[in-house]
Amino acid sequence: ILYPNPSSGKIIISKEISQYGGCWIEVRDTHGRLYLSSKLNVNETLFEKDLSFLTSGMYSIQIYCDDLQIESMKLIIQK
Image (cartoon, rainbow, N blue to C red):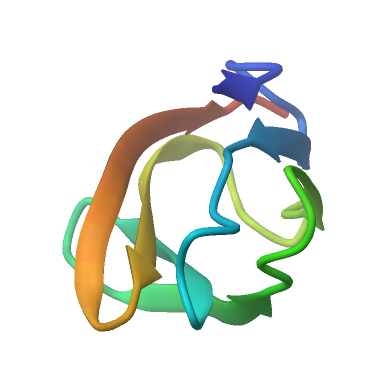
């Protein structure tokens, strides 16, 4: 779960990933440009990210665990 969406920059992702060894998040624009790659603590279920540096537009958020993509979400940034 991703909220709020649309967002002005600060987001929260709720995801259970404790069954994995290592996870990370990537944020990309619609052209595939990488804006954020960040490791996630597998012992947590809520992840807060400050994406206020992004300009208005649509972005994709992917969560990878153990080298497999387990989640893909669309995010709208509105300033």
